[in-house]
Each structure stands twice: as C-alpha cells, then as structure tokens.
View 1 (cartoon, helix red, strand yellow):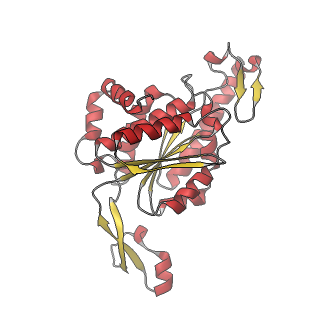
View 2: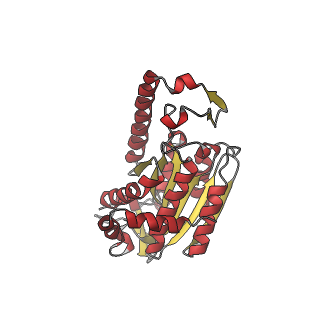
View 3: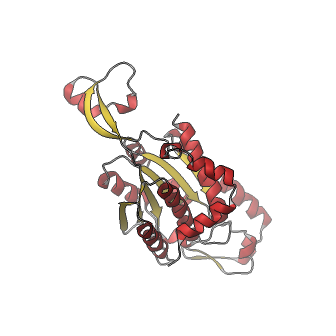
Amino acid sequence: MSSYLVKVRKKMSIYAQRRVRGVFAGNYGSVFKGRSMDFDDLREYNYGDDVKDIDWNATARSRNIMVRRYIAIRKHNILIVADNSNAMAALAPSGETKADVAAFCAGTLAYIAQKHGDLVGLVAGNHESTMRFPLKEDTAYIENFLDKYYKSIKVESPAADMNAVLTYISKAFRERMFLIVITDSGSALKIDRSIIRKLGARHEQMFCIVEDAPLTSSFLHTKEARDIEKDLRIPRFLRSDRSLAKAETSYREAQRQVIKRTLRHYGIVTSFIDSSDHAIPRIIQMLEEQKNARR
C-alpha cells in the first residue's frame, strides 16, 4: 500500500519551509478558520447577533426571532468529499491521472489536519454508490481510506454525481464540519446551488478542482486518446490543431471563472490543481484565503 502521508511529508520538506511552518504555527484555528463551535441551544435574537445564527424554523414557530447558541469545541472535524467516478481516471495536465492528483490532495489535507490532532474522515461517491469512512485521527486508518479511495477509481467506474454525494452528506452528518470537496470541473459545474446553500448553513466548505489534461497536450500526440466519460476516440489531427488549442484554452478558463464566481457567491474558496507537484502550495494558499475570508 502506498503511503500517501509519507509522500506528502517528503514534498512538504521540499516546499518552502517558511510557508509550511507558518501554516502549522499556533492552534488549528490558524489553518481552518471557522467558528469552532457546536450547537448548544436557542434564545431570542439580541442586537449585534450574527444573522447567520438565526434559526428560521424556530423563528416561524415562536414568532420571535430565535438564534442558535454554540459552545466551543477543541477539535475540528475535517471531512474530505471526493469524486471517485470514471472521470477521475482521465489524465491531468501533468500527465498523471486525476486520481493520482486527487489522492495526493486528500493526503495533503489529511496530513495538515492530523498535524494539528484533529479528526479526519472521507466520503467518496459517484452515480451508483457512496463509501464512507468516519472521522478519526489514526494514521493507519487515514492511510487505509486514502488507499481504498485511490483504488476505487477505474475507467469502468460509474459516472460522476456529486449532487447525490453532497445530498447524502447533508442528511448523514449533523455535526459542524469542514467539507473539502475534491472533484473536477465537469462535476463542479453540475452541482446544484441549492445543495451548496443547504450545506453552507451548517458546514464550512472548500473546493479543490483537479484539472483535465488539454486535448492538445504534447504527451498525447503520440498516444491514442479517448474521452473516458463518453468512450469516444479523439483523432490525432485534432490534438495537434493550434486553433483548437487556443479555443480549448479559452473554454477552460471560462469554466474556471464560472466555478470560482459561483462558489465565491456562497463564500467558498476554490483551488484549481493541475498536478501533485503543485498541490501543496495551492492547498496552503487556499487555506490562507479561507482563513482571511473568515476574519
């Protein structure tokens, strides 16, 4: 079994040490900046209360504006929500599979969480099934679910359905968590905004988008290329067409902007990751942006 946490630790030592130490400095709240609170009870609204704490169902029942009260919790719950559809078996811009990049991203996030002694779990799913690994902090357990996640991704895997996975999470997890969604652009564009909004009422959310290899990538020129999701062969002459390369670059950038704009509307920080080598600095940047957004 490949040790994802060891791989992350080795790359952390290569990455700029000052930045890494800055992320690990202090308590965990300096990395995942959130409320660090769990629900306690309800009381009437007072001037100055955060409007995000208003419980609208309780308000409707009592005819008085009611807010939720929270108590401090010491540990954060980090749930990695990962796409394990056939789309993740396709190639990333680095020439790795998107599964390679996604598993490394999940390992990086688990490593950072474990470094601060917090609980980490994983839910991975597609159109047909969902697998769940409850929150724990044991190293062997984390390595096990990372390995099982990676091995669950095959060309023959079912198609993606992140709406189904996120709906499952909204029903199955009642405690407050940090949800870190790992998927690709195609799936991210199809996520229902109502699900994002519903999850945002209880949980903090971040998105890691694993990018697709361009059809005109140089490493595809000498290989057979297929669209995994549609099972179509991509002719070689198209892969070397300069006008197609330019159009594809514009199209992918437009996709990124739509995803960023949509998620930003809900206060969600997004990172686009094209390789395992770039995963650590981009994830750290995402965590810093999330921390600053919550100040």
